[in-house]
Amino acid sequence: MVSPNIMIGNELVDRALVSEKLHQDIVFLTDRIERLNRQRSPNPKIIKVYQDMLDTRHSVLNWINGHSPT
Image (cartoon, rainbow, N blue to C red; front, side, top):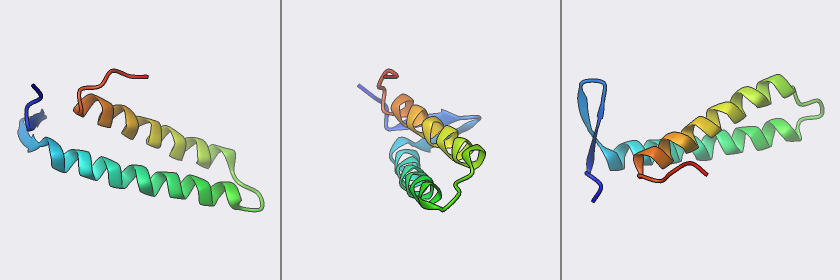
């Protein structure tokens, strides 16, 4: 059974709150990447930075929810 709380540093935090924040970040980053890709001359370096951030959010969300990486 997965605990409702996780330790981040020295702080015990509600897993659901962290998960919700990660979901919000994922939605924002996905939208941002889509908007950048629609620009006339998208900057691949900036898109890569946002994609790396998105990949990290997905990894952390999977870890928090107890799923193994895909």
